[in-house]
Image 1 (cartoon, each protein chain N blue to C red):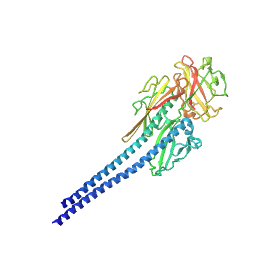
Image 2 (cartoon, rainbow over the protein chains, first blue to last red):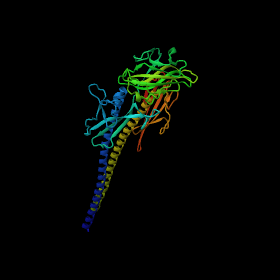
Image 3 (cartoon, rainbow over the protein chains, first blue to last red):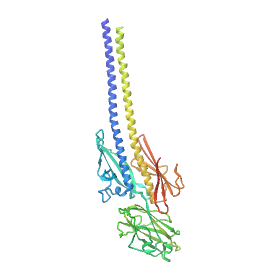
Image 4 (cartoon, each protein chain N blue to C red):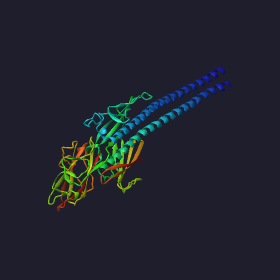
Length: 330
Length: 154
């Protein structure tokens, strides 16, 4: 009897052990799986953090370069035609020890391996941006705006999927601002180049200039005046933003402009309006209104001229123009 | 007495294993939770950075539009309840531009100044991040020159 009891008791212990082993197996298996997943996630988290830092650094550098020298971003090195845009043309930022200044170079940049041996490749590419008639950015249609670029920073690393790369985007814009004021048209000079208004103009037709302001000659239907040549002083080219006139006009009269720009102080001077042809004008219904210039047609030119057209009112009253102001981005 | 002792030993093993198992499960869950929070934080940092770049793009866009048109002020366009919309990658940006003497929230521009408020919002799944920049620019109505007076992150 005693031996039988002992045997039964041993059987119970064995069952307990078996149950314990099964429970331990389930727990350990589950935990091992959880720990494995956690380690993989932790590693990826670390990589995402590093990629975010790299993308942030690159974006700040690109923005800084765009602010100080727009053309370095708009026309990066090895892009003589300024047309190498899109993901097929990667660029990267370098910070040479020689001058500790950010520079743009063609191709991708590669980081040194981190503690886990992961190597990060980072670069950026640029896209042209179009704007619609209201001046807002549009996804399709509109006119290309050479003062706006979309920069996309891409970071990839060893072991990461190439099909879904890490990217961040920001719009870069040429937001420097300067202006030129022309007034007091008092003498003809078709050859000179001016950096500020000195009273010269190139030619005129049916225009009278009493009291330093532009008016139509009496009994004439239309008149025009071509300015002298002005130099923005930006050898690489400026962006022309807007044109505005001061003076007065009656309701039926009109003051309109065409604009010409060139990279040579001698032209050629092709006066065009808002649609890029000589069939359109830049006009406003009243003075002191800034009229946006279609930058695309005058992109990165150093010199400019304007042509002003006056048209009288129905009762033959001429508008009077005292100032012409051109806003541009150096 | 001997029989009870043996039984007691057998009964003790299972609770011990269960208790150790629970401790291990708790540790594992804690580790998984910490990793989850860390991952969420890292992802949130990335989204916040994208939202910030979007908001900053909105400020620059508004400045450029003011440079081209000194009288520019925003009108509301969907999906923005105020201001005009701008999309920067995955970020939806709403830009509000007001001129003196108008005010918007806590922004009160002075004479010949504009206030630009740009809010970048990114929403992926249940994670939402929002960044806001506010800029005051000086606009010279005589010369058309626009200059940045202040830029703050709100």
